Each structure stands twice: as structure tokens, then as C-alpha cells.
Image (tube, rainbow, N blue to C red; front, side, top):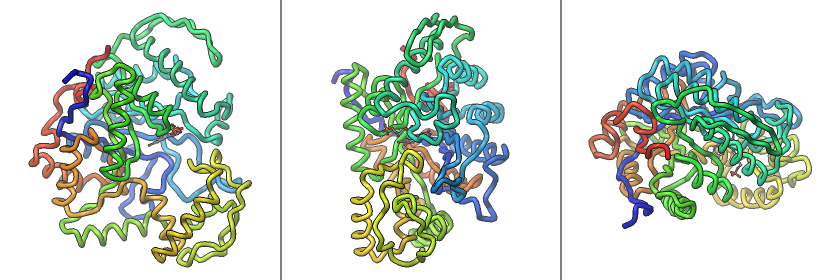
Length: 431
Ligand SMILES: Cc1cc2nc3c(=O)[nH]c(=O)nc-3n(C[C@H](O)[C@H](O)[C@H](O)COP(=O)(O)O)c2cc1C
């Protein structure tokens, strides 16, 4: 077998994933911590490190979501800057990787490369950059260039941006005259113990997948089940080989939401309670309004879907969440069919759409450990980004109950194997 072929490692790893703008985190329970205070982040990061998680991973949302021309107040948004947070966490952790989601569309490459390299040096080789292109115009409005790039150009731009960053990290002089900036830069900082920050990527389109297969070390994605993960692996293996890289070089780590309990029945009761707290009546109505493009406040969240048709012109995906406005009529028709077949209310439908995408895995500790062991055996993924629904205690049962069961099955690390994130993820040295 040539070294370019993919060989399953039989292992999985976990990262802790802290969402940006989202509905999945419960903020209104008496047990909920603050998304602003450092204490929330310190506690959950230290729990992750106790469970030998490879990394702590922050998504990025740089602006509150808007709906019908107003700030959308029903989900969690707004928290301190990723790199400031990760630099603070570097001081209270020893082995945990520190992954900052930062977009390539609105930042400047020299400045971002320098800040990421600083995080990598200060953490002694534990930094990573999750490269995203950011698809919403309302984030773009924060920046002097505005929301100016279409999809293809965002990825072209991301390639140039990453080339510049890699040159800077390799200690090379950079002279670049391009469409978006001109750079004449000399190296300033030495390389960290892991050479340069590890590169994550999130973006599911064919161009996004190619970008990852060509340039990155780890893909963060959403894969609802094992067959979807196997298909995705096959696709990424092909793309990675197309770019002349060994197929095992690109790791795949989808998001997962665990709902765990001693027995299956308790886990199911907990799942229902978690869902009830995640998607309240107002969230359910607001979710539908994004697609209907109309005020639906008169509808009963526990009643059937609105019988009126969506107002397509007023629904614009670039200003709302990541959906395609062009497919709204078809989407609504499919939802009506599904809701009728399953006797779903507005809230049931909204719940399935808003939090069903997180790859929810609910079950007894033992059953979930078996399910994870199956992922490890098939080699479909290299690990999971665990999105806790409660901050800061949401990883306690994962670390106390699930991790030891995975270690007993020999599919999860007993300890950190090295001191850098690159080593702990089993990645090759920087070439
Ligand atoms: C799993 C996943 C997570 C993402 N997380 C973020 C994020 O935290 N911040 C952000 O600005 N964009 C995020 N994005 C959006 C990407 O930046 C990108 O703009 C979008 O997915 C469109 O690219 P695509 O068509 O290749 O998927 C994410 C995308 C995916 C698929």
C-alpha cells in the first residue's frame, strides 16, 4: 500500500467546541454560566484537559444576528475576542490545543498571521487557526470593505491569504501585490515548537473541501450519522490525493452533542428536557419567520405550520442564517409534508432544524461508548468536536463517564503523547 492511501487509526479524539452565535447552548437555566466571564471558559477548558481532549475550539460570530431589520435577541451571541480568550486559557492549561476561528475575508493577513504566531509561541506550540470565509453580509458591514466578496472570490482570496500567512510563519520575506492588498514584509518572530499553527477549516462546498484538502490539517464539519461520515471521508480522501498529499494527513472532526445518562430511558427524558430548554416558543416562531419572511407572532408555537405562503423577496440568507433563500418555497413544502406525517407543531419542526443538525447522540454511557467505538473502527472520522449544551458544566459527564469507557475500549488516548497540538493530533511535521 502506498503512503498516499488512507489507513484507519482505530482511534478517536475529542475537542471541546464553544459555539459563536447559536441556539444550542442553554443560557436560561439556573446552572448556566456567563458567556462573557473568564470563569466559564477556564472551568470548561480545564475539564476538557482533564479528559485528555486534544483542543479547545472557539467558533466566531462577530456581529449579532439580525432579523426583520432588528437585532435577533433570542440566541447566544457576543463574547470576548477568540485570541484574547485563548491566550488567557494558555496560562491555565498545559497540553490543551487552542483553536481560534478567524475569517480570511475581513482580516489582514500580516496582522492575523502575527497574532496567531504569537498565540502559538506563548502557548509553546498549541495554537490552531480555523480558517473560515464567512458568508454573511451582516458581519461584513462591521468592516471597512463591507460584504464585498462572492463565494468563488472568497475562496480565491482565502488561498492567497493563507499563502502569505504560511510564508510569514516559515520566516520568509513576503512581497505580494494583489487585488486586495500589497505587502512587503520581513519576518519578525521565530517559529514555535510546532513550526506553525495547525490549520483547521470549516466550509462544506466543493471549493471549501478542496481548500481544506489542499491546505489544511483538520476539517471541522457537520455530519449527521455514520454513513454520512463515511461518504465524507471517501470524498476528502480523493481530494487529498488529488493534491498529492498522503490521505491520512487531513483529519475529520464533526460536531457532536452528547446527551448522556446511566440508562437509555433517563437519557431520553434528559434529551426532551434539553430540547425544551434550547428551543422556546419565541425561538420557534422567530425561526420560521426567517423562512416565511413575514411576521408570524400571531401563530401558536404548539400549533400547526402557518398555512400562508412564504414571502420570498423579504427573506435574504446573507442577512439571516446560513440558508439559501432561493430554495425557500421547496423547503416549506417539504416541511409541511414532514410536519403533517409526524404530527409536528411549529416548535417540533424548529427544534428538529435548529438543534437536530448538531449530530445529537443521546443514550446510556455504555451505548454511546459503543457507538463511538464504531466510528473509531470504521475510520470514518478522527474525532469529534463536542458542543456542550450547558456552560461550564456540560463536559463533566463526558469526561467522567464516557472518556473512561472509551479508554477501556482502547479507542481514546490515555494521555497526551506530546507537548504540541501537532503531535497530539498525530499530524506530520510542517513540510
Ligand atoms: C461546520 C461549519 C462551521 C462554521 N463556523 C463558522 C464560524 O464559526 N464563523 C464564521 O464566520 N463562519 C463559519 N462557517 C461558515 C463558513 O465560513 C463559510 O462561509 C460557509 O460555510 C460558506 O462556505 P461553503 O459554501 O464552503 O460551506 C462555518 C461553516 C461550517 C460548514
